[in-house]
Length: 269
Ligand SMILES: [Zn+2]
Image (cartoon, rainbow, N blue to C red; front, side, top):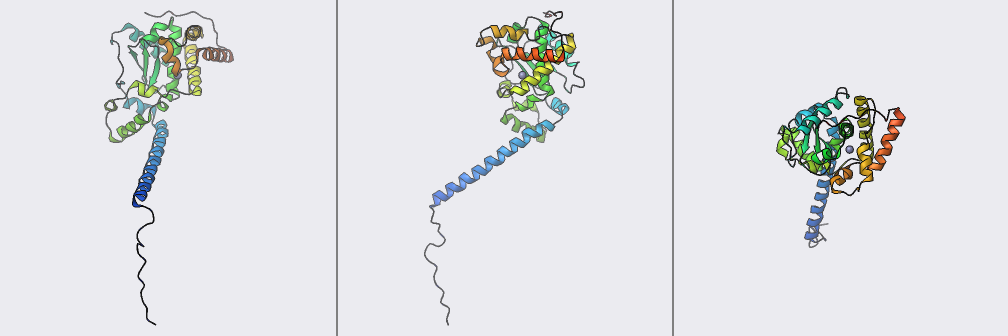
């Protein structure tokens, strides 16, 4: 019997699917895979940031300032006194891994934030609102609480996380990243992070003064004021509502038996 090869049918190597559709599927598939890998990487890096020792973080960001910060003169009296107050408060945090640096942002809007490397920014607007050192001490103590729990790393935007990763790998300077404070603080913190920071802040205030009198006085005033007021809306958008906060602080003080009466320290300016 003789083998007679048959010719394959016409178009056997041609897919039934239109080539453009095939190309489209390929592009969509590859893009999907790429996005999945990128998201997984970002997720891993965000978690890995917590394993970067605070000391390394402090070195990486030493001397760093956000690009959009408008600082007051280094000779500013309020800057000098606020830095001194932060140093006093931080002395109650044994083995704090940061050398805290205070900067005052020349803005009328009240705000305070904790930024990488131990940088605490308070605005002129916030300093205008506080009426005693005790009020300011609690606001600052709260920000110290964010450093303690390293919340400030969780608030970093994705873009910054990726850039930071490459800075660490290439040994470049963080200053070259052009990070803005508004990029960092946009994400804010969740309720639990805020209440933990409040708890730490109140403990620090108690250690410093031996009582917690006036620690939440600023928020009592804000609770009575118009909460949409331009001067305070920024702070309130990234911190708990003042009435909840006053209640929580009172509960903490009651629980730990901290006196709510005691002498008030006036502001040093
Ligand atoms: Zn906070």
